[in-house]
Image (cartoon, rainbow, N blue to C red; front, side, top):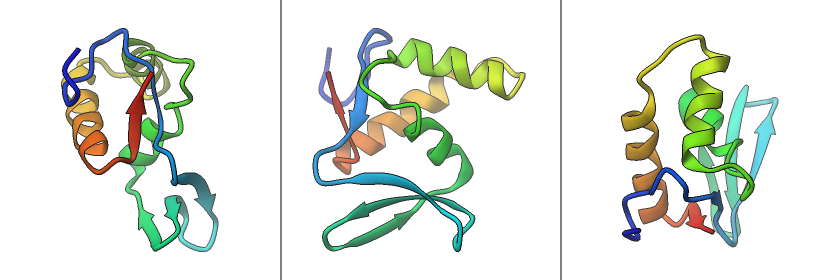
Length: 93
């Protein structure tokens, strides 16, 4: 597996130093880290909340497609996870 292209069997987890939480005042998920906060859009929050080190990328895609009653999300999820890895928001297990 490349460091930046998630393999479907890879299991992503929120990166060290980051904490994902729902922020009622912002009405969205945020990533907290010592220097600040990243406000996430709905798609990013839905993907990251599934990055629990237990589910594979393929599992996350399948769960999102079922939850939102759609198909064809693999490329978008992988593109987000690639960017999230580059930002150190996720790590691969």
